[in-house]
Length: 458
Image (cartoon, rainbow, N blue to C red; front, side, top):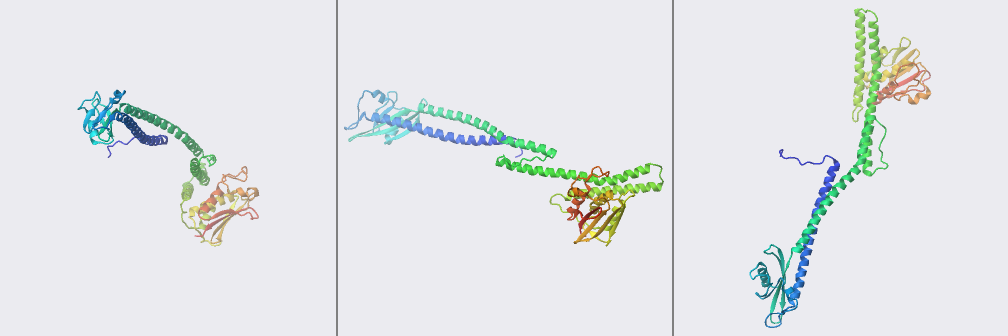
């Protein structure tokens, strides 16, 4: 029912575990208290019955049943024996306590016990009110028989039982309070490493730290938690690195079209231009903007496809037209000539045209940057796919730098006078590998540098 109020529950794990421990302890103590007090009551009743039995045996020694009738023998302690003692022969009352009346509750109860015969006990509520225990004991002789009924006030035994019950309840309350306090303390101490690990994981994830928890020196549960947190930190680190990589690659690839836009605007503003020159400037800017859009779409698509479980987007590109467009857009500042060589102009690669451009563009830009006079881009079939060679006549790649050639952010010489962030070649290799291809450097090329882009056939 919607109108019912939900029971409040602790919001913290420590509070919930403490509540569970308190509830469990309360149930266990309740069961133990009931069992204990039941056993105590039985023991006290057994003591009362033993006391009554002893008194009945003592009174039975004063009853003479050897003759034709029952005779009460007077003794020195008969006053003690007369207290709460009834003696019957059959249903006839021979003796009763001085304070008891013939029609009193205790006398009637004693008469019922004597009439039933045998050794029996019963508990009744007396007039005061109080509880009294009565027991009967037959005394048999050769010619006559009698029954001795003794009574015992249970007030002392009940007081003892009540005292023990109160004491057990007080002890239960103290134990429950101690259980709750100790459980909160123990759980808090047990969860302290978890809180510390959580805070450390939050700090490390915020700054992309390489620190990890590991499994040494931790209990099994904390080692398992540390392993899970380490895996989570690794995923967060991978996401951060991927984000940084994407940001760097976008800025690297967008730099060239942005430079074209800035150069065209500077040229257009340098002096008054004709309508035809203005339209030409607009065309160049529009083409550069379209190139920027294609770059963003390609890299963002690749980033999405690089997610776990994502399949690369299919596509087919006729290679030669794409290479011609890239060569026409290259800025050699008049000192470098770039040419495309193709045995088969219709050769196609199994990648989208925009992705093909993003794979070859860094290789071509790098070749133009370091070439002395000429850059050659050739394409031919290769091992069931397509191979694109980008060759320049520059100084080549230093032997000491070959191993770091495709490492992001690495350059052979930071002071060589060429701009660049060291991201182009790693980007080209990453994009090629994303579609099942490869970008590599040919160290056997005799003069200059030669880079190979192997792509699947279209």
